Length: 186
Image: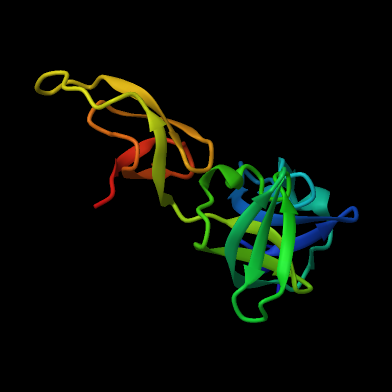
C-alpha cells in the first residue's frame, strides 16, 4: 500500500520525535510532474498547525491512539482536572495541552480525548457547547429587527457577544470554533 493510501484525517504520526495529528491532506499535480501530497498537521506538543509535503515527512510512522470519554471535574489554577469515565483515573492537564479548549469546558460534562498510550493527548471539542452566562448587562429592548449586541461572561470566563435580551443565569449555545453566540438554550 502506498503512503498516500495510508493517510487519513485524524491519524497520529511521529515526525522528528514529535507527535502530530493529520487534519487535512490533498494531492496536487501539474503537467507531467509527479503528484505532490500536501499535509496539514496539528502538533500535539504545542498545539501549533504545521504544513508539510509527504516527501518532507518521509516514511510515515503511525502511532496507535484511541478516543476516550473523560469528565471535566474542576479547574485547579491554570490546570484542568478530568476523570476517565471507564477507569475513574484522574488527569491534570494544562491550558496548553487543551489547545485553547478550556474556554468551552463545563464542569461535570463529558468530553472526547484522543489518547496515546492511555494518556490524554488532544481534547476533541464538539462543534458547540451550552454554557451559563454568569455576568452581563441587564436585558434591554432595542426595537424590532435590531442586531445590537452586548458583552456577556460565561461560566468558563470566556466573553461572548450576545443579543440584548440575554440575562445572567441564561444558558447559551456557543460555537467552539469561533466563540460566537449561536442561540439561547431552553
